[in-house]
Image (tube, rainbow, N blue to C red; front, side, top):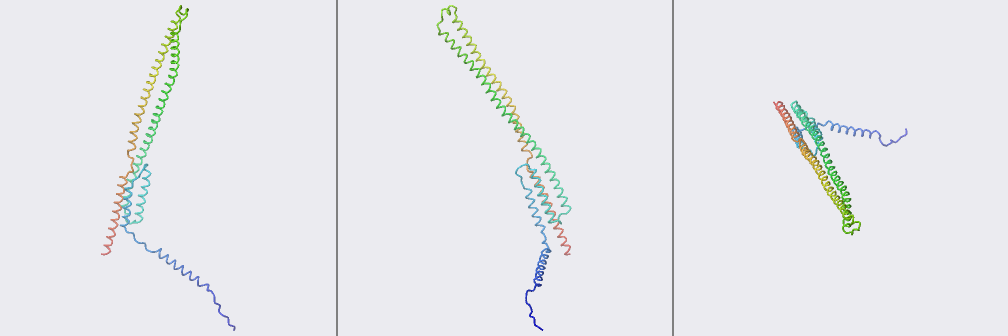
Length: 294
């Protein structure tokens, strides 16, 4: 028989066995981690975390209105905190705790809802009074501008009339002086024409001067009339503005706050319920321990 040397080479079966072994070991490690018993939560620590969070929420301030938008967000934070407490320590959430918390939540919702309605009503009043204030201020500005335009136009028209009268007075006065200094002719002396012309010129001059004085008086009366009407109307508008400004300030200062006292009181109630619930749980556990020992 011929001798055939044994072939030495790679053994393909062993690596698969090693891979399987490593995989089993990893699965056993993962299983041991997955099934590792959770560390029990300390009720006192859970209570401390919840109480601190409630104290923070109870003292939280909101900077600017509308506060009703902050109320909604704040209520969600409270609900999330209470839900977290319940999920971490469900055995403490007994009937007494649940009923008390639900009652406080219900009262809180009503109180914040009423405050939100009051804020909305106040905001509507503020907007209306602000609109009316703007309207009166615009009316006052238009009145001032109208008065300036009216007096300017009255003075312009009278100035044109005065210029015409002054021109005519100047012409007549010049004519009067010319007649006074002129040497009358024989016929003028015979018929006394110079005296007649002088008298006519003097009469016309007096008439124009009288018209000028009357125009000045008429201007003064018109300006006084416009001034009186303007001041009366302006006083009416300013009186309305003063009333509206007072109402506006009163509306702005009334019930526009962040309901801090309401929210603080509710959080104190929640804190007391959490404290009492955990105290009952701890007492119950102590009682069970004592019973087991006996």
